[in-house]
Image (tube, rainbow, N blue to C red; front, top):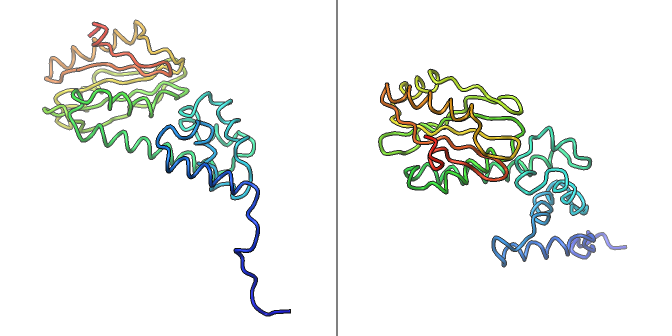
Amino acid sequence: MSGEPADISDKPAHGGAGHRARLRQRLLNGGAEALADYEVLEYLLFGANARGDTKPLAKELLARFGSLAGVLGASPGALMQVRGLSEVGVGSLKIAALAARRMARSEVRQKPVLGSWQALIDYLAIDMANLTVERVRVLYLNARNQLILDHELGDGTVDEAAIYPREVIRRGLDIGATALILVHNHPSGNPEPSRADIQITHRIAEAGRLLGITVHDHVIIGREGHVSLRAKGLL
């Protein structure tokens, strides 16, 4: 019997190694559309499950949350309720979501907001389209319409969130903003504005006019798309 250590390269690869290698090659050689949504999730979960088959879990996540965006946008608590998904797996999904948000945010910050509108909508959709409660944000802009503060006012209930005009304008004055864009989401998925949405927008716009802060728009985000109150002639 030899005292030399066994060559670990002689050990057979586990059953899923070939599948993972093929996914990796498709990802590296095929570009953005090389993998289906469930395969993207499979790949993200590889690190959390070194040898197991992650395809069933990936498909379960899509079935539960409806889409790749829904999975990545789900809260850690909601993800942890999925059987078979560990805390490490949740971390793998959330870091991917964080990377996507950071990339989108960098696009928004580098250019005047009104001149890069699609980049702004992409950023907001990544962050808000799949939320289960209403979230209200105010994007404060300088004289060159560059973003100086993305301020989250807070979360409301499933169907409403309070916006206080005086608080919105006062914060803008404190940081030297000359304009702002209101943003909130509709958890129902339908981004069409309610009467209350239109009324609060007019109140904030009027308060802003008196103090030299322009309300450029109020954007409502939903899973079904987005609505600009200015584009609809409501501002």
